[in-house]
Image (tube, rainbow, N blue to C red; front, side, top):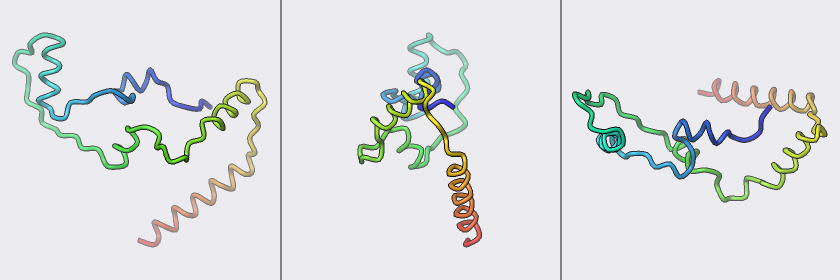
Length: 110
């Protein structure tokens, strides 16, 4: 299991922080034309994309509310690389079951 995100994959997908995205399809076409030369007979964009507020928040990066503990991540990463990290399978299973029950309870309530 790998902890963290692969920056190369995020950059290739245009999801890395600091990557500017065109606000409209027209801005994207003009940017592409300036980088790759003029586009002849390019079709008009037929689809629009709108991100949910949750997706937009996720693209902004890690919130600075103290919910991310970089030191803990470093300790776990080091323990994994040294082969000293152990997983309590019973605790993981208990949490998965509890989460599944919670989700089923939410679906059943609607």
